[in-house]
Image (cartoon, rainbow, N blue to C red; front, side, top):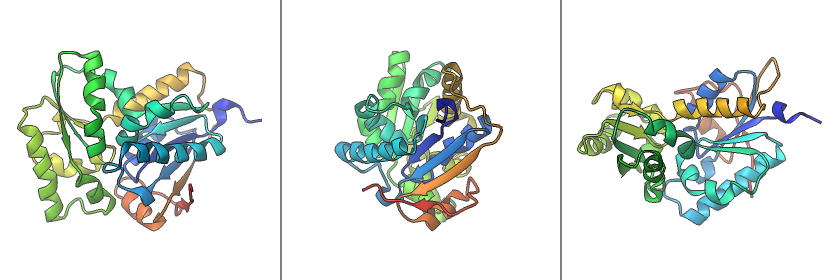
Length: 265
């Protein structure tokens, strides 16, 4: 029987956004075996209701359980905000939610005024506000929903003039609050940094995936769950549109083979 430490690490997001975490994780731990699931059939998650997000997440977790993974990385802020708490005790594998795993690290920054740019569902959950204030009660946390940003990334329209105006609109709404730091509260949003940084310095932005991947590595090390393999592997699965996923992913990460389409129903 395969030792737990040598089992796979699974990633899950509504689309290509989780690749911003996946790529950093592979660089940190290149000898692990990874699987990634992009739920393009149900994209975008940000407009969905709580019960639907929990149901979707459970189906994805059930798929990962059949794959016998050792850990699941919730590389999606929306499901981390909504589905982590209801599901965290139902599975034997480790579960890493992006928001909860990063909040302490963010709160230690030399800043008090934060603005979170995220999906509707993440903003409505107040997950960032509550988790940051748990560690830094004096923090001011403003939350702004950016519902038009995920489709821009998934449809590979980041640099089109209309898209630039949409990106700028939400950024300027954030800057009104004079934040010291702007948290990119959706794993799709780092794809927009080439545009965002045309209008304000790069130093203001926090990409939670940096702290997130370091936290995961530290926790796996502490629990003696690092693979002793000398090589790593990767597999990609989608619920629909494998070609679209591969094309959108190419902005950030080269996927060599077409992802495998699977049904979770």
